[in-house]
Image (tube, rainbow, N blue to C red; front, side, top):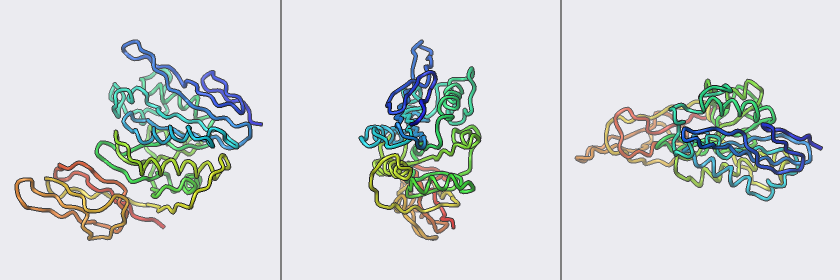
Length: 316
């Protein structure tokens, strides 16, 4: 039998499924907003997994992934372990449909946070204080930024075997070696020996069903690997990306993409063209390496030097 767990004064007993409040935060309108946390706490011992999304308010794909996961019957009746699910961490920015908090800060640069700091710092503090101690590992869901469409991918640190082992169980199409950044949830969790993988898929404020389905399937594979659920999945081969580079616009104009996101391309392959809107001049965009397209810029109007195509180079 598992022990009961406590989140900010709320007790969840073994065998109980419960939605609790991480904390309440006051807006300038004197409106209080709350961050709901869904807890599925099996009676039987097992790993404690965090699935979190909405760190940035316009990252809707991750929110949909977590929503669909917690609504599944086999997840609601876990065989063992615990699922902690936070569909929308940054509830304030989600209300505004923005990436940043009202004060302009990026929540994912506010960790580890402080109890009496800015709004972002307080949310970060509550996650570190109330959520991180009760989990073993987790997946934090993100999307590409404005106009950037990321092919479904997991980001972890290849230097740490526990990161890679988790990523292989999740088995996203691409697994990318990505170093920690200061102030992020993933970095601060690593200091507590709690590996957090970052899943990237699609672009902001736009549902991408390939990214959503790959995220759902990855979560189910991960839970299956730890016997938390009983579900059958075919193997999903992953490509490990060790290095990456951006292809930038060699001219200003209208950008037309010729290659598909996620495709493997060879050095010298035609990736797209930039056309002069006032004539028939075309500037070819060629691949500079052999690699996989891990992300694309969907902006049709580009300026010279803009980042257009993100290429990943396979590692050993």
